[in-house]
Image (cartoon, rainbow, N blue to C red):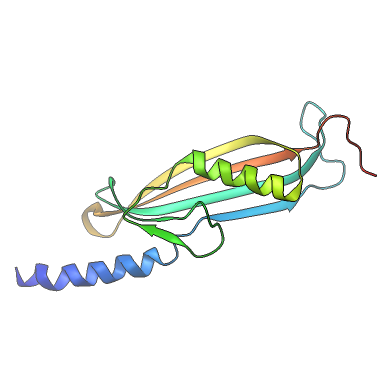
Length: 141
């Protein structure tokens, strides 16, 4: 019991320290001139978004990145925002802000890793890649 009473506060502090970097990242990169999709449509921007979180026993959310404030160092404690739909919504919002065109999602990966002893704390990561395609009939001035 003594060991448990010493370990629990240490684990809580460690989780809070790790949760501090649990933020959603969103990168928007202009496409290279002449870059197109396989069907010939020109690409205007490439997007890469990633959100991650910590979970106890792989099901109880401890902290996840805030998909509503990417790149802000913001996170939610005790809530599970680790789903593809809010990440995709944020990519669409950024594309509208950049007037980049229609968004096409190209790849989505999800991974999880048990951390620390006995896999008590799990790290889950979702990454979504997308491209923005120039609307049909619109040429550069």
